Amino acid sequence: MEINDPIKNPKPLASGAESSKIENPSSPHAARIELLISTLLRIGVTLSLSIVVLGTIVTFIHHSDYRTNPGVLPTLTQPEKATFPHTLHAVVTGLAAFTGQSLVILGLILLIATPILRVAISIFIFLHDHDRIFVYITSLVLALLLLSFVLGKAGG
Image 1 (spheres, rainbow, N blue to C red):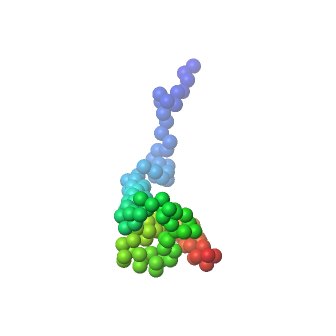
Image 2 (cartoon, rainbow, N blue to C red):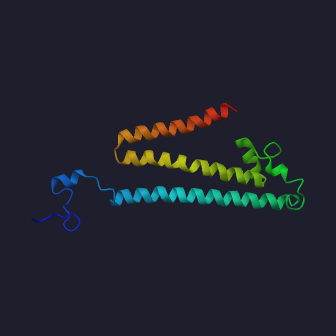
Image 3 (cartoon, one colour):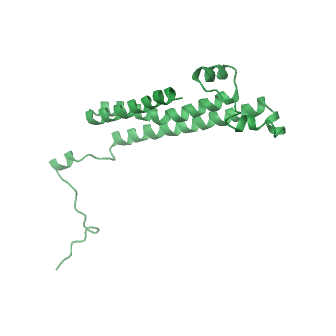
């Protein structure tokens, strides 16, 4: 009796008309989408990290007493004494003055915005693929993300 070994003699999953119904996750279109999204995430994280590091360096250049006077450092490291901008207007004003704290906040905003932008791009990808269910689901996710920022701001 001959034993059918699936490793030595693999059977195709589908053939002919059936194979066109099976979606190929390794298709060139899917690979381009994965590359686009991974590139977006990599660039967003790298750029945000670079801006945070730059802001930290600028802070220590503008305030050399942070390096030399341990008593002054808590004004940077303790939340109740820190002077970081807390509003978008304060961040923009600080960026115009090239303050390190505003650069750090900009980097953190970019870090938060990166996955949100990924969700928004996914909506367009699903629109292009005519996948209405995922357009609706992803739009709902994006709306909930944006609503959480509005409600978070309203809550203090």
